Image 1 (cartoon, helix red, strand yellow):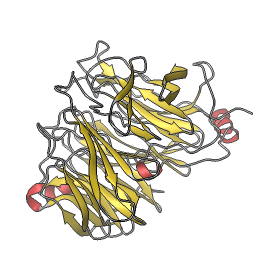
Image 2 (image 1 turned 45 degrees about the vertical axis):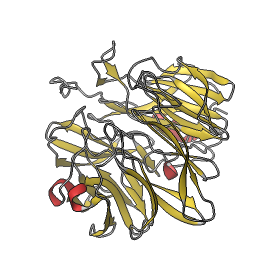
Image 3 (image 1 turned 90 degrees about the vertical axis):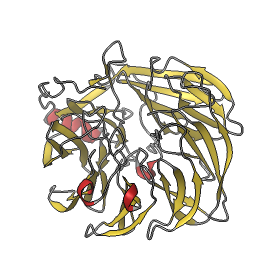
Image 4 (image 1 turned 45 degrees about the horizontal axis):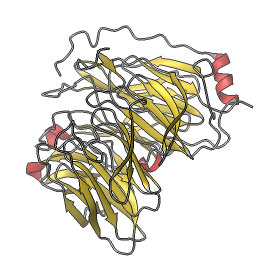
Length: 446
C-alpha cells in the first residue's frame, strides 16, 4: 500500500474528561479488576477474567470516560496498575512510547526517539504492544528499536537498535512481535537470519544478549509462554518453524517445520486449548494446523492440517489479523475475507459461517476476547460486539460503535479500517486509532 502523504496532517483530539469522569471511573471500577499488561492480556491468551462487566449495552449506555491524543500506529494499548501504555509514530522521523493515567487519561510521560522506516508496507506506525513487568516497560518499534524504560517515569534503562546491531532481514511489514518478559530475559523475534538470530533473548536488567536461535526469516507472531509436562515452555513461531524452547537458555525441546509455500504471513498467535494440550495455527495462504502437545513429555506433533486452493476458496480457516481461539471442542476464527467461522476441533471441518460480525473484504478483521461464556469483539468498523459463540452459531447480544476507523486502506469503500487490538482491564475498554486513545466504561452499574 502506498504511503498516504496526508497521514500525519490530522489535528489531534483535545483531552476530554475531568473530575466528574474521574470520580465516575473510580466508583464504577470492577470488583475483580485485572490488568492487561502485555499483548493479548496476561499470558497472551485474549482472556478477560473479570466477572462483572455489563451483560448487554446500547450505544447510549456505553460511557466514554476519557480520550487523549495519540499519533499513528497499529499497536494496541496495555494496562498495568493505574497506567496505560501505547507506542505510536507522531511523524515520519520518530516513534514514541506514551504513558497515560488510567483513570482520567492525562499523559504522564513520553519517550520519543528517531525511527525512519525503510521499505515497510502499511507504514503508518509500530505494531508491537508495550510489555509492562516489575516496574519496567519494554517496547519494540517497527525497525527494531528495543527499549527498556522505567514504567513510572519513562526514563531509559537501556536501549538497542537491533537494525544496527544485527543483520536483520526485515519482513515487508516490519518487526511486529511484542517483547516477552520471562524470568531474567526479554525475548523478541528479530529475524536476523545471517546471524542465526531470528529469536534473541536479552538480560532484562542490562540489555546484554543471553542467547540467540534459528537462521529463519521472521514471522509476525509474538513469542508466548505455555505450560507443558509441568514446565513453562517458550513458544516461538518463526517464518519457517514452530518450536518449544527453554526461555532461559534457548534450548530447543521440540520443533515442527512450517516453511510457507509462498511467504511467511503468520500474523495471529497460536490459540491454546483450555487444558493446554493443543495449539491451533492458521495463516492466510497456508491454512490451518492443529498441534498436539504431549502432556507428559516435551514433544509435539501435527494432528491435522487443512488448506484451501486459494485465498478465496479456503478450507478450515485461513486467518490473517484476527486471533482465533479454542473453546472446548470448537475452534472460532475469522477467515481470509471476514467470514466468522466455527470448526470442529477434532477434524477441522466447518460447522458454520457468519458474515454479520464484520464486512466482507480481504483481511477483514475482528479482535475477539473471551469473558466467561461470552465473547467481546472489536471489528474493523470500530464496532464493539458482545456475543455468544457456540457450536450452533453466532448469537449477537449487543453492538455499538465505540471508535472511528482511521487507518487508510484503499481496498475498502470507506477507505479506512480499525486494525489496532483493544485492551480490557479494570472494567473498561481501552482502544486507539491514529488520532486518539480512549477509555469506555464496561462495568455493570449497581
